[in-house]
Amino acid sequence: MDYKNILLSFEGEIGILAINRPKALNALNIETLKDIQMGIQEAKDHSEMKVLILTGSGEKAFVAGADIAEMKGMNSIEALNFSKTGHLTLKMIQDLDRPVIAAVNGYALGGGTEIAVACDFIYASENARFGVPEVTLGIFPGFGGTQRLPRLIGKGKAKELIFTGKMVTAQEAYQMGIVNRVFPAASLMEETKKTALQIAANGAVGVRLAKMVVDAGFNMDLSEACSLESYAFSFGFATEDQKEGMTAFIEKRKPNFKGK
Ligand code: CAA
Image 1 (cartoon, rainbow, N blue to C red):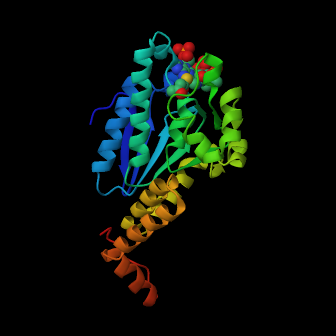
Image 2 (cartoon, helix red, strand yellow; image 1 turned 30 degrees about the vertical axis):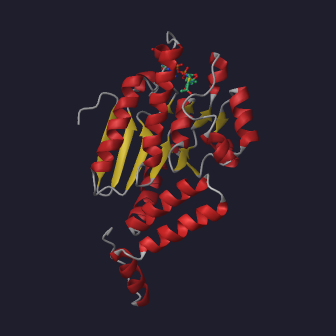
Image 3 (cartoon, rainbow, N blue to C red; image 1 turned 45 degrees about the vertical axis):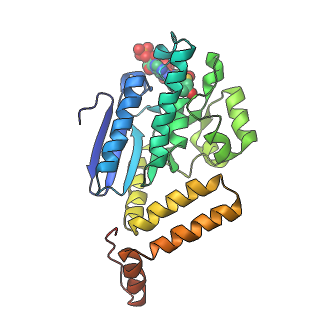
């Protein structure tokens, strides 16, 4: 596929989608959002891929937000469509049937923090900066920042970030629970790939079911969510991977999962 603003590559079972508009610090304009949507679809169709890593090209930014130059002249209807395009893009990332890890390698501001938070979890470089500075532009977050961020870190901390628009360091983001792990910039991709490979070595159906159950169950009441878990758990017993995983344990050898 020919993309203008993303790079999509596959290294065995790992996919890497890099947002690639370094001149604008990888800011998300409509064209880039559409490229990401197509990239996610292509990654989904790549059956060999077991984990996707989302990152930004260049050393300075993951994504410096939605494209302010493009947004500046929008009327309300255009802004509604823009927000909806952003939401659809982030939902495609969230709903991808395989894990997506954000490798945040610099500024992740506004839409940048929002797209990272739509991934399953975030690894960051020491020079990463997070924040939702939209109020400093006279607006507020429009790609899920008012919704996913409170669900991830709680309402109080999310409101503090949203109302102040302040930037936080990777360490602060780690302490707030936005980021799972922080690495020196030079080892971020290597460490992210290590985790991706660790996930890819597991039973793929189990990993997919786990992602689905965590996400679908998160907003259900506990008894409904546990019931969903039981049904999904039982489905796992219809797979070859379950037979192989448990047989390998009993036979004291490494499992050879087929993803079936
Ligand atoms: N949109 C469009 N262009 C952007 C951009 C953005 N969000 N962020 C940076 N750029 C462009 C700059 O305009 C500049 O372009 P030129 O070289 O053509 O002038 C280039 O990227 C480099 O940026 P700076 O010169 O500003 O770099 P810096 O090192 O001095 O500062 C920065 C880096 C702190 C990230 C700063 O660029 C910045 O504050 N960017 C905007 C961050 C922001 O407000 N993001 C939220 C956007 S709104 C949003 O995301 C809405 C939503 O919820 C959907």
